Image (cartoon, rainbow, N blue to C red; front, side, top):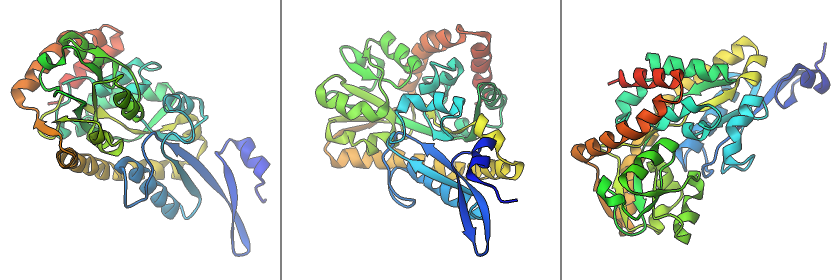
Length: 339
């Protein structure tokens, strides 16, 4: 029996289309993935956009056209902060999304940018198979979200004027930290904070609403913050800012797919994690080159200064997070076990 568009929609599959293969027709499912970062191509541009495009190419090839993935960069499909809620409801199929942006709906997601908790890529990538990763995956599953690919990024600080390096440097600065927990640490050190998505950082610095932006190395480059900055504190060697930015999928949409297609999506997601980690590491080096070329003073955080930030974070952000719920306290305890 030939499947009609009405039958497919009734079955709940996302955006079906009919592909003609010779004398036969078969149903194809078109999924949509949204992210806030600048668009490019499979080979050039922000590695997070490239990762999504590689996902699309691999999915189409390996499913033999049964699954297609359309990429919507720059929050062109929907606003940045709406994407997490949309995948929970099944209104969006997939997103590559900064974990703390979801903290308003799922407080446990703030652990994905807990200052000075994760300080190396080795520690970060160990999360997936560790109890903390399994627990976070379980929590998200209960909220209607499937974690498809784990992506971690180190970050640094771009400053309009004077450097933001040690805690003592925060006095009098308006800082974008990237998460509630990062803001708690910055406030305790003496800064004023503002909460905006990273794709609004350029405008905030340009107008003077923000003196310093803490974000991933990739975003520092992609959003051209070197044009407005006189200083960069790089996270290439040591960092208190290391964020989980996973590819996630709506559980509603995922469970409507046949098992072989579910398995294919998860397999490709796992394969692309190495690409994501390599892209993040390369940008940690490249951001220093980009800012230095633009005339900014570039410094690398040392271990002693990282320790100063960790002491503040432990007494503020970590304590606040653990006090939110038994679930948050358990996650933090499990995270501390990953060395």
